Image (cartoon, rainbow, N blue to C red; front, side, top):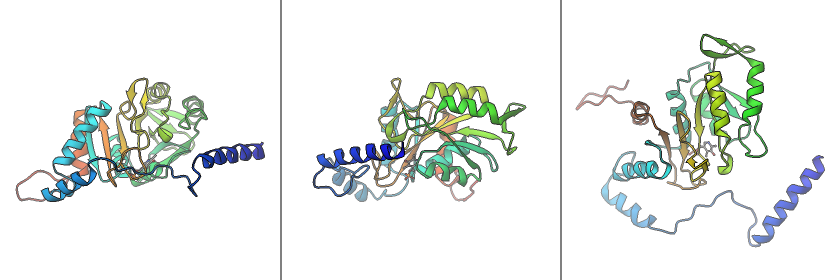
Length: 260
Ligand SMILES: *Cc1c(COP(=O)(O)O)cnc(C)c1O
């Protein structure tokens, strides 16, 4: 069984290598700069707005909304920070458990840890390489109990607050089925859409189904800003709160520096 799997993998690797004869290794993603990047960077430097605010940030956020169909987009320093804030916006608190896929980049679990919450790994399926909603349903049946309207893990006695589907290499998770499960178990769905810019689920852009979701624009992603990320949401109050939290939570004032 194992050896035949290894053989299959070796055959795939050989087939890929045969069409890339001059490459020693196969990159996951290579950034490609073939447009006006140099021009825009010069313009940005000339403007003096080179940090977290400025015209390009506003334009970028608007373009993200136009492209994904999300009502709001808030830029962040990277995808991990975006997901960290998404989880806080979803109400994740210290000591909560958050369900994350067993196959993902470590940032998904790190963002959970940054909330002092506990990543709880659950199975993925072959077809999508993402969270397996049917297995999740059966598993939750076994491990949860309700206290009031909150879903608890009856073995660890911790609340299970949220679930973070991740669309591996751009393959969308079965979001409809997952949504049903979230409703049934009172879980908040936060999508980690770091790898799925441009991927649609039933005609709708990934990252626009959950309460909030995160994108990444690291150099190895579908589109890149060097380093960067964004939070998507259709909820105006959450978008406002996201902007507040990505900008040091400063209360607007002409001279006082109060950060709530
Ligand atoms: C890349 C990635 C992130 C983190 O993005 P950064 O911008 O590198 O912080 C989060 N989750 C997944 C699944 C990723 O692939």
